[in-house]
Amino acid sequence: VALTNAPRRVTPPTPKPYDGTGRLDAALMHFENYLITGGFPLTSWASTAAAFLRGDAAAAYETRAVAMFNAAPRRNMTWADFREVLEHSFPQVDADYTARAELHGLKQGTMSTRQFYTKFVRLADQLNPRPTNPDLCQMFGRGLNKDVENDPQTQK
Image 1 (cartoon, rainbow, N blue to C red):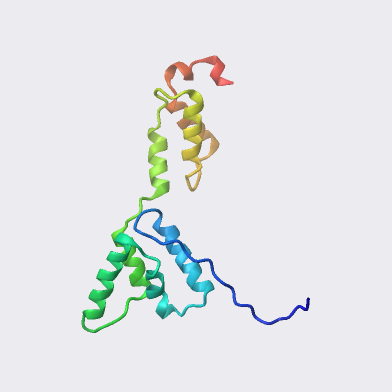
Image 2 (tube, helix red, strand yellow):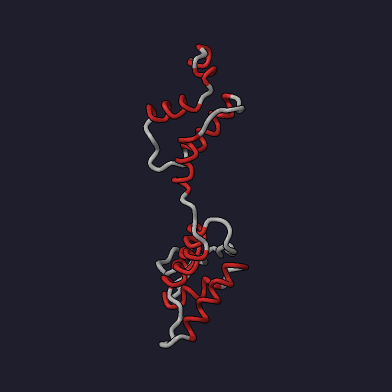
């Protein structure tokens, strides 16, 4: 097999359709990777990515695109417009904020200590930046039931 320096065309993976559910930031990242890798001109990004919209997301795009095209002066949707339409129509909950709030209010309650620990670690792993170990230990201790917190067997 001869090696050449000839450029090779990369076939980008086709992004999954977006319908307004799921993580918008991930969908936009997949769209952008597809558009960049595929060599699409920036002027065609919005219309190309729109082909992967379904349901409520497609309806939101079409409503805004038609309004922009019919307005004076007439113009096509840019990538920034496309992102704005989706971000406005499908606001995303900040996962870090949600995990942090849940972690600070987490109580063991009726969970076993193992269940509480598993849930605590899952939430802590979502934080960026992650709190220091002493801070995590304090939060964990505050969430434990008092009978567990004072049991010498669980303090090992």
